[in-house]
Image 1 (cartoon, rainbow, N blue to C red):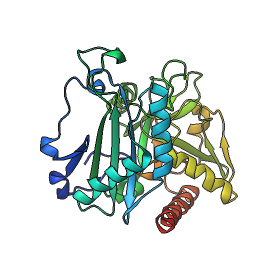
Image 2 (tube, rainbow, N blue to C red; image 1 turned 60 degrees about the horizontal axis):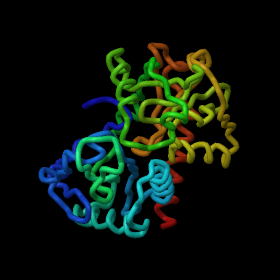
Image 3 (cartoon, helix red, strand yellow; image 1 turned 90 degrees about the vertical axis):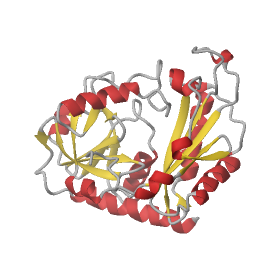
Image 4 (cartoon, helix red, strand yellow; image 1 turned 30 degrees about the horizontal axis):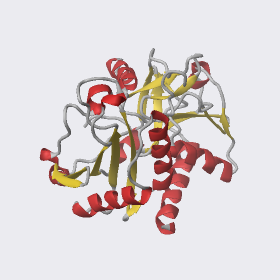
Length: 305
């Protein structure tokens, strides 16, 4: 099994899942999009992913807020309402008899192009929508073992050329950072901002703990993660000092604890960064406390639906 924050237990049911494409369900082996699709041609699209537990779509409205904002930013006009999208997601879940430990990914591209081109005026169809729901239970090994990070030379960019908050299909930058980390023997990449301060990871958001305080980046150069925001709120509600601030690798190497956050893995401890052990490599009390609080938050989300 590939080790990282997206480790999932193998599930044979995924071999026969049905994929939703523009109003129709297809067996995964028959689920296809044209090679003239804008997402395939130039990475022109946006997406969201969230979890389903006990039949409930967890924090789904926050994810839809981000999806609608991303679509507006890139100028994709959505020809359906939130209620219609939620119904299509539920249709996909029902078709696959899915209820618990489910990961859903919703992808929207600008549509089919007349010819390979960046020009949105050459789009000859409405947006393409794909919904992939899979049986995905997170591996408990990752939570126990933790992950290692390597600081990539690829920086998180400024918002004047590709806003890091935009959840778009253009992820090549993050892929390059991850490849660099993998080649260095780490599990995932830590990325700095344009000023050299710690920003985020290639697919998750980064937090460190020092002297009982939780630190994370200013948020200016990272994905506005739903889990990240929930952790910051949990700190505020439980009298845990959480600072959104600039800090460097000098601070990170001297951290008592470190962890990353993401929709799939929740909170995952970080054991080493650039070969340096974080803290004593064993004890991480604040990370564990926040993990429990986050799990309680999910339970509350399930019951409140």
